[in-house]
Image (cartoon, rainbow, N blue to C red; front, side, top):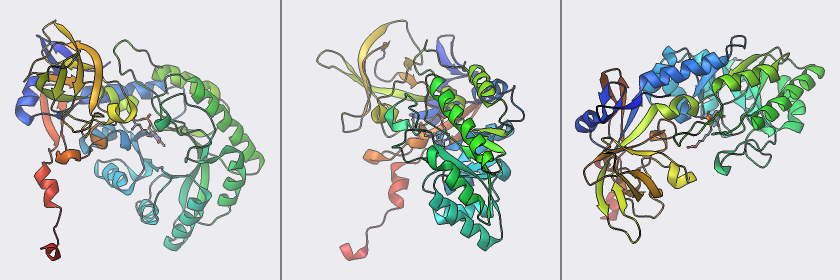
Length: 419
Ligand code: LLP
């Protein structure tokens, strides 16, 4: 459930009409709802209520806006980060260092060092090479890094291939059949406190079965590690829960997920950790856009909006569906191609979409844009970076300024030797 509803004929974010935000901030603009973020954070935590003190770390990559992170920090969420930049943001937003988990296959030397200097809660090590490097840095600093070994369980998450991470050919984690050997070897390194295992098989998962299969393998691995004499006190089960992008779609609830986790992990005797992103932020945001013009097509009109693939990359990148709705629907419908202004055919949000009838100048939204939206933006076609707004009841604030194309150009130089 989200707090983007039609009231008096106008789509509102909580108590604010989106027309008012467009007027004040311009378009395109991402609009987030605090109440929705908080509701999702609460429902997710409640779904895990059968577990003993689960650790929940919001996947910062899904929405790294400082204000969004602050909302979640206030909800006692930690952070799952994948770069030094995300780590800096999580700390700036008020997330506690001990609640931060650092994932990713390509953490650089500097990033490992940054994590150690900040005394983050856990490194999710993705290879033996990374483990030895981290151990050496930790020894140099006289520190001990708490670590989980990320394993690749070779499970098909049955989601889009570009966001599947748990098949053996994927770059993530160590092959599960080598995990005991690698874990035992890293556990012998001074500087590392090998304390757990981690798994994440993919994102936007539509059913729980692949997760259950992966978690079953993790349970077996924990038993094998203990049989080998290794200490295991933590298991990080990642993120991945999918959300409905089309109205009417059903996805597994956090409660069903939590019930499955409680059943599969019974007897593991570890602290469970989670890294949800999309399920918290996805439906807590929309991309508000204005129709530039409606262009006659051969079979269908093209609705050309002022948002483009550089602002919301998911349709171009994954063929993803985002519901598209008028902010002031009249009840009239049309079937159209929804496109942005960028000079490639990939800048298409939808083909043959049945949607609210729209004319030039009217406002519309792409829904479910709160996760993997603004964060994946680029400045392609010398378009600026889109602004972001957070709504809270009847008030709203710009939580990321629009970065104009000119400001991006200001960072560029033409060397004098070109003259
Ligand atoms: N943990 C790890 C290690 C991850 O790689 C991810 C997402 C998450 C947690 C959070 O997953 P979530 O709960 O959000 O499914 N850009 C793509 C999604 C990429 C997901 C990458 N990893 C999209 O727009 O669909």
